[in-house]
Amino acid sequence: MAMAPTAKLVLGCFAFAVFWVLAVFPAVPFMPIGRTAGSLLGAMLMVLFQVLTPDQAYESIDLPILGLLFGTMVVSVYLERADIFKYLGKMLSWKSQGAKDLLCRICIISAVSSAFFTNDTSCVVLTEFVLKIARQQNLPPHPFLLALASSANIGSAATPIGNPQNLVIAVQSNIPFGQFLFGIVSATVLGIFVNALILLSMFWKVLSVQKDEEEPPVELAPEEDVNSHRFSPATMSHLTSENPHNVNPEAMSSHSIPNASGHLEANILRSRISGLGDNEILKADLNGTKDVMDGSLPKKDDSLANGFAKESSNLGLEDIDEKSAKWKMILWKAGVYIITAGMLVSFLVELNMSWTAITAAMALVVLDFKDARPCLEKVSYSLLVFFCGMFVTVEGFNRTGIPSAIWDFMEPYAQIDRVSGVAILAVVIVVLSNLASNVPTVLLLGSRVAAAAATISPEKEKKAWLILAWVSTVAGNLSLLGSAANLIVCEQARRAQHGYNLTFWAHLKFGVPSTIIVTAIGLSLIRA
Image 1 (tube, rainbow, N blue to C red):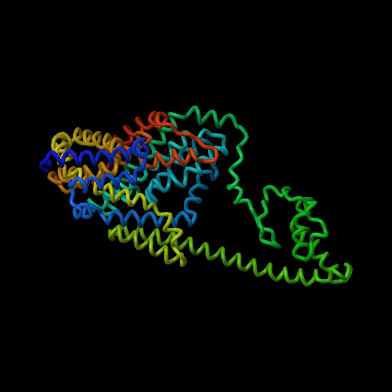
Image 2: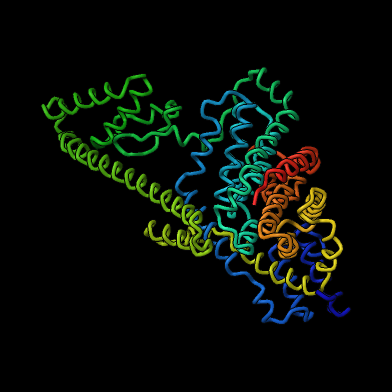
């Protein structure tokens, strides 16, 4: 592409610079408007400066990518409601063999969940689990947070739905889901393994010391106690089985018990405090009720028998309702998992990915059979708007001719039929992904890299797209600012009840060797 006129070139570069600064540094003092607004500002400037016409700006927005992104986000919302991430979190601590075992589990679970539920979603949900388990076992959170974020990035490279840049690549390249997966999965598996080894080697002493100290475990946050709650048979109100002595026995005086329901509940609470079992409790209450029916209690309390009979009847109905609700929830969760599995199978048989994701999302909405607004409100519409603005801004920058000029200079040295060419291309992608972020890098380089590879063979074109997906994704591990997943883990950890600050330099110390080694190993395993 020829260079644009000077005025358009300068104004286009200025608009793109505004977008870049606000995308990389969303809270700059002179314009603290955030990434989404910064993306729209860049798009608006491209149209205002007449780098693009309004029609060209609208045409540059890739609707299939937006549809795929929206559909997968809705599916992730319903999967979270179906407790898929809670089950994954429980797998982290189930029969754990210590700190090193926990770190390896985090690497595997984070990678697998990111491949199918996106890396950002996995990091949002799993960060809290990781922090709680680290506190419970008296372990430093630093290595586990690094394991979560870096493995999420590596694992997300395996599928077209693992991260936003892969969505772009899948739509633009028309590579089927199955071919994408099988072309890159071996690199992903070995990359996760190598990344875990790097983490273990860097933090071996820290993890070993913490394990050998055998300090008493730290109490979990209060919300963990929800799993240990049970219901009082009389009122279905919460009683914490872990701490029954919270009940004040003096509050249960006889004058405050007006009916059989209160009588049963009070005796249950009193007897639990004194150490009686539930069978003994019920036996004592039945004896008390028999006394009432035999007239051994004062006549003014004759209503106790009727009250107890009514309470017993209500108790049976409540048990039936509880069982019914439990089975409905089990069936609903099974439906969510089946629809999600159907979506993945549809991807594998090469149905249109965008409409498949939207269809799965709407199937889940119908299955839920109630107002979908609360679930739809959890979709990150700001991300969709960010993508719209980014499409327009990048298209405007492309029309200045600068990206084409830079690629024309680099192309002779970055041919993927040579090892040196692949290495140079990988370096360019890593640098650009950390300077301009990975999605804009894919939008800027994707078509050019693929076109250059297509002149060699169709297989090389497909391999070029996969190399772009692999390197731009793993490049996110280089620094804390390299990917949204890193920033999510950092922010979630900082805001947690017992917050932890993951610093830029602490991440960089691990990120540089991990990115270089994992990228290099993966490049040798990618197959078209």
